[in-house]
Amino acid sequence: MAKKMRLDKLLGHMGCGSRSEIKKWAKGGLIVVNGRVVKDSGLQVDPEHDEILLDGERIQYREHIYVMMHKPQGVISATEDLREQTVVDLLPEDIRHFEPFPVGRLDKDTEGLLLLTNDGKLAHELLSPKRHVPKTYFSIVEGEVSDDDVEAFRDGVTLDDGYETQPAALTILRHEQEEHRIYSHIELTITEGKFHQVKRMFEAVGKRVTYLKRLSMGTLMLDAALPLGQWRECSEDEIDQLRQGKSIEK
Image 1 (spheres, one colour):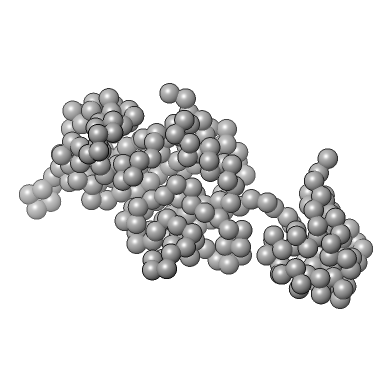
Image 2: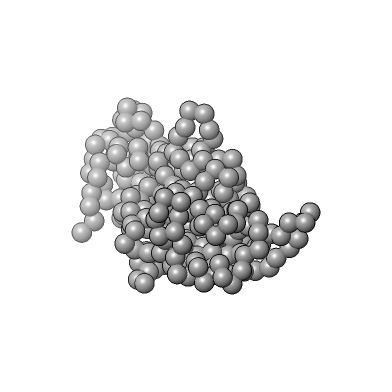
């Protein structure tokens, strides 16, 4: 049986207006539920099955929102900040109304896939250290990444604070030389999320990350057609697969 809720709460959650505004609209005959004008804004309604019209426009209720963002450099992974632009600032008001937050964080100078949602349960499961959710990055590294580094990452490396990382999958894509320096293009998949982890892992083997981009998180992959700095809502299939594949046992 579907859970009922107050009409004004439903409309408020959908960003239609304040409780006092909704009450005024109801008294003015602007709200119709299942073909009947409703003047009581406190009416209990079924958000899944009742047809609700506000001034002739159908209001389709949804509790959660899931946004895929192609995060650009220079923007911080936070909901608000007094000095810096945040990823939430890049969203329009009708999306911000749902109060989405970033699931995990990307450093200010890191680009790529970022999931924003107001689904706290899914976020917790994706970020839980016990879940081993894989995250894959593309990186340009100053220095020649070698097969020895691949093996070291596979075994786990010791970071500057003494922490030993979980095994990670490092793939060397190519090397290039620029001004007498060698740069390595690589992909790296890790199953944890320590502070600056990718950068610190390469520092542990004497290399320096110069560019970092997240490509995927669990089953969710960055849409190749999504421009840098832009966003789109995730499809139901993407979220269903993310839920089903969130727990990757080692």
